[in-house]
Image (cartoon, rainbow, N blue to C red; front, side, top):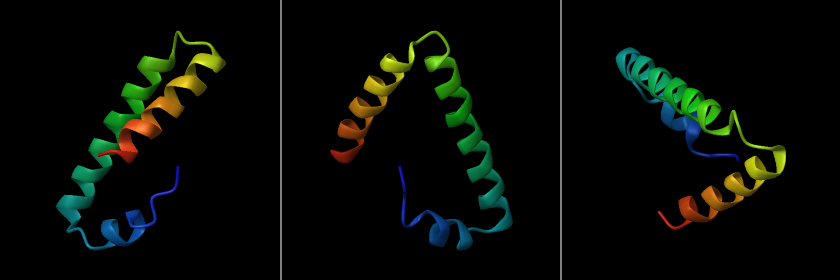
Length: 58
């Protein structure tokens, strides 16, 4: 899923902010791996679609 403001926003961060962003992003990657580890490909696809709907409403 593309986030058009991502690159611009990250460029505006201080070095400390970039480090914190990378740590936070790593947390999301680890969390996603843990959640999807025991799911089938179809279940991962369904979860992804549902999360897109939820995130669009935030």
